[in-house]
Amino acid sequence: MSPALRSVRATRVSSWPPILVAMLFAFAVSSCRSGCGGTSQTQDQAGADSVAKTDVVVGPAVDLVALKRVHTRLDASVSSMKILAHEADKYPERMAEHARRFRKRGILNKIPTTPKNGALQKSVTAHAVQHQLKIMKWKISVDPGKPHTPPPKRYEGDDPYPFTQDELVESRTLTIELAPSDKTKVRTFLKTLNEKSPRLVHPHKVVWNDQGALINAHIFRFRTFKAPNRKFLAPTAARLYDEAGFPASGPICGADTRCSALKGKIRGLHEQATQHHAAAERSLALEAEANAWIAREEAFDALTKTVESTNYEALLP
Image (cartoon, rainbow, N blue to C red; front, side, top):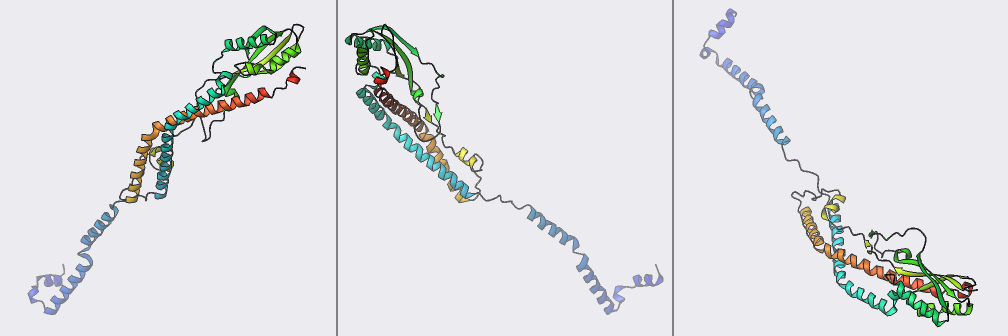
């Protein structure tokens, strides 16, 4: 250290001129403003940044349009279920009406659900005797053709199931050999056969020989089956939520009161759907059975028309 600096340090402050003390004090204050508080200021800024980074992150807003669509679809489905459930109580009377119509028209006599071949043979034999004819041969055989395919258990669509005749009616071939070979008597026998026979008989081929006439005819019976139901997908909140892009339990509403209100309504509709589901299924089953009997009557009308339009002149040259 230089002698001059030692001289300065050794000098008492009280002996310094006042102007020098004032200058040194001002220098110290200025230096502190730029450096003394640096550490504290940095800590305060870091704390503020930390608070900003730890704020709660708010998720994306719930798509209320999609949620309203879920509510609308479920509401419409529940309304349909209520109508179905109400209709279930009406079907017993409708089925009774079908039964009365079938009895009045004798439909199940003409086309039974069981063979009843013994009664048919007895009546046809008596009819032949009335026309001075004798049955020399009697045979009933299954018609050749493709294997029968029953109707499906369920089907798509709102209209009644479109039955084919093969799904409703089984056809068998009746072969009768009549003697003697008297065309006039055989022609009269065939033309009046359906007036006397308890069954619907459709003659379609006659072959003459020296002994008499070999007649091929179709007879029918209704098939038995479980009527196909319309496919019914029970509405559930979970499925509709999923189709709308939400979790199966629905969106997380948070503080969104509109979202919470809609979810509450959807939950209530889901409970109603569950309540009416069994009755709706029962109504669909009864509806299917009623439609099957309507289709059977239509098939009977079509076959009766075919039989009545038989050209006996061409059949019996």
